[in-house]
View (tube, rainbow, N blue to C red):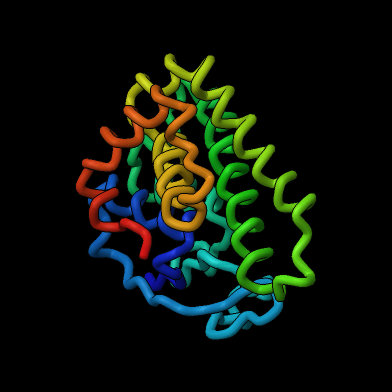
Length: 200
């Protein structure tokens, strides 16, 4: 299988960590490409007409895209336990929350990197950060049971999201107001799968 990815993408990282965690990283060739919302660049649009990452080619089900679709394939194909049946809907909910943090953070990045400074909307960027900060506050206040639960796809997604905030939005200093999340992030970042996929 071939995974079209980018080392800066938190969604692609989530997928790669998934392969690591089910001991299947050797089954996939990671191909790093460049693209953005206005130019698909090297992303294979014949395989994924959306021109988005990640895109997984060569599965028994053909080409798959969207990180949640791909991680569900990984879990199904390798019986990896990433989506525990005993706590499925809580896992899906927390994965959606983490993916939402990633989505807002990536949109914030694009606003700063794709638009010229005179066309950037501070109101819009503040709105994206508000979504992120509300989510972090909720996890800080009410997320201990989830954070301490057995490792699953939602933890992969959240770890990827938090590292992306450090990588692209360190000026927002999310860690200073979220000590429990900070401690959890420091711990999770020591997993071999997270070390091997650190964004760059």
